[in-house]
Length: 301
Image 1 (cartoon, rainbow, N blue to C red):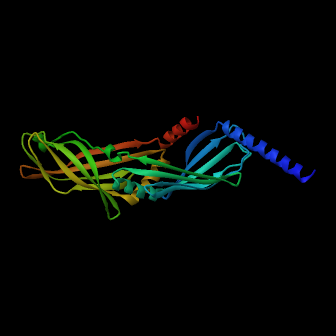
Image 2: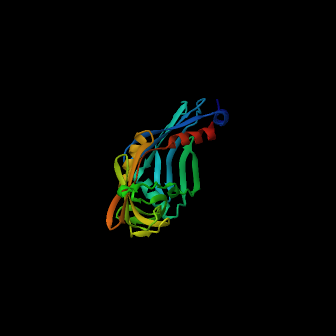
Image 3: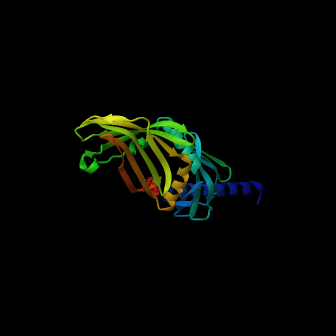
């Protein structure tokens, strides 16, 4: 066999193989799924699994995959398990829990508007570069989901009723001493026929038996008879506690037990009362992985 014939044969083999690779990629019909991997206070693993209908027979590698939120790197590819002759592949993403908290703080500082950037770098056939960048704008009003309320109740033998907690809104303030600081605007209604002085409202929040926040009023108010008043409560969220709460939440199957006790200091007939205005204990459930799998099924199902 002369050199020209050898080169021609090699070229034909490469063309046929490349044609098959394109055909195989087009007809793969991959079944994609996601699941939680290893989780601790520092890192959360997400495993993305692909089941292929046939081997692709194309060497592929990922040299770098990073996800940034608000300019903070929050996740990267930890490993990519793939064989050209295999029918299964797995990509393990490692989420930095503390960086995720930092990114959320920056998100609130930016008025709950931000950007997610995904950068993928890899190679096909060992030489063809893969360079993909994805940018997604986000403007979800997370603080809008926070709302406390409570009905009025009798105190002092029924002579007076506590103010009803009508509703709560939150504004971002900033950071202070390792805490995220919010202002809770608590709207109260006085059902009594006389004014009620409110000296202080305070509360403490726990998640999975971990203290994550507390708050107290900056100044008291007087609620007019059959009227309304808004009390501002300075609220501190302990940032260092959040990664541990998150890890416990995931290990519990995306379920957390959240408790909040709200206390009210009020004065009636020169007598001071400290009253538990509201007490919450709820199970907060998320379905992050279910939503992710639904997105994968819609995109590739």
